[in-house]
Image 1 (cartoon, helix red, strand yellow):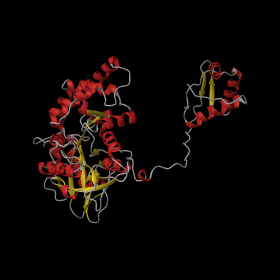
Image 2: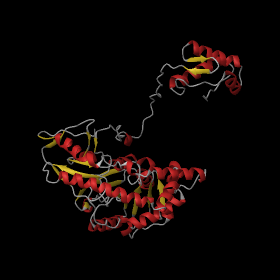
Image 3: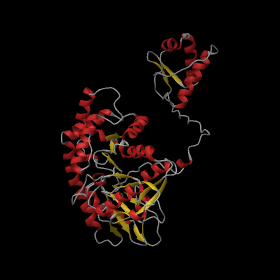
Length: 466
């Protein structure tokens, strides 16, 4: 095991080697069972006597931290050692970070209605391994442009042009590590501390938290069955974040009238619209309305997309398409962030798209998700306690709870999410958001039966993401 040791002066060198090896063991950097370098090798690297290293090793063996094995070497003792935590310190973050919560560890449940999780079993993993292996054999091992792999930018431009009528060429596409990084880059380029950013209410909590962390004042704007209420957007808002194709979490699309009104508002107020095309690939009914980006004539819309829901969250590939006036700043922000992301995955995804495999996967997954959507919709139809919000796309359904109805937690049995968790304003709206990416079609009826058994009338108590 290669461990870093730095000697100072020519004092008690054996004591210094002893102390630094002991610190590495106590910190957990050297783990139980790991083999230390031979005394001769470590002495050569440190330019000291072999006897000095041997003395340090002997002290650690005597203290029970190391064990010698004849003919095999010297190893860290098998006795468990707890790593020491970093110093607490006195350095504090900016105040805006105090209110940012990180997600809790996800607990497993027999019936999993969590939101935003695609079914990994539908993904053609064997084909993906073949594409990645090919890139590992032939791909370049060098830094690339911050915009991302050239072939992927071209493939994304073609894909969104055909499937969503988005107007973009390869040079307009900036590849990101998921949609969240795309929002972060846009925010860092556009948001000044104190700027007002309008978001949908209810809406996507990570976007709300991100904008706040950048120093923005976030204003929730009500959403009805036509989308965001444009007249309720604060006059001082510089940015409006919306999910028009499939409002998150309600699931309703923004009407053409509202889209037109929002674009007109942005032009009048010299504002920017961030269009997050959340899981719009999975549509079960009518053709979606044109994206805001394709209707925009003033260059005020930034289009954000992701492959996390379409393919797998672990791939962490998203993209943004912005007006040309913002492109240089966004590329610079990406380079300062993490340069360009993981190029092997990007190149493999480009081939996945160009060979027609993405379109094939979307067709297959859409059929399955449509069937699950239908099972839930049919099961909830006519239930007076849960009023379904109409939706014809995506990976989840939203249902509003009737007054006085509450849902008791069911840890380990059924996982669900409350509509209140997506609200930033008071009073929070009441309802359930039920995902169907993680639960098999045959398990849905029993999962809903269990969920209903946890519902009761009377004093309201919070539900749970089990």
